Length: 188
Image 1 (cartoon, helix red, strand yellow):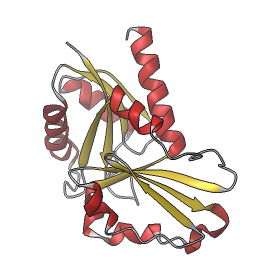
Image 2 (cartoon, rainbow, N blue to C red):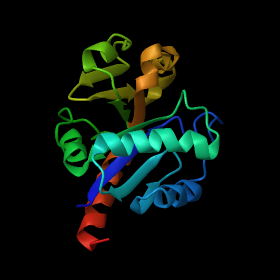
Image 3 (cartoon, rainbow, N blue to C red):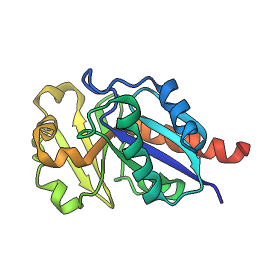
Image 4 (cartoon, rainbow, N blue to C red):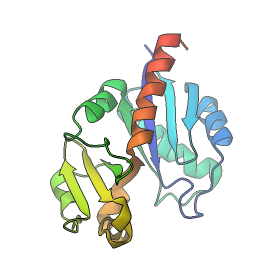
């Protein structure tokens, strides 16, 4: 039975490192056995079908990518989410989250092999600028757009815990679910 997964790749096309064209990524993932592969923007968002369970899909992608594309594999991680998992992340957002994009930047920190309680240790939100909400496998963040240069959330990238996180903005997160639903409903 084929499972439809959303794959969030960490460490692809970020800061001029690990450059990987999405067309090459799509072709490669089909080459190693996945089907109906599509990508969304160039930051490592993939939707695909696999007859493998999530953990084996994750291992296969994490092992094969650095070999094929000579990427720095200390950055590469894959988070494999089912449609239901992504749907739950969106449905369980904090009240009002994502509803004032003209005032706030909204992001979701997806945790990879990292417990929420461990991840929270590196968050130090600035009062009046940042807000965070921990949830199951994610941390929702909000930054006041007019004060984003004062945000303390950017300090997280210098921590060891950051190697077990990947960030997507709220619009990307919602768009990935839309794409999964469309793929499933079109019978691709």
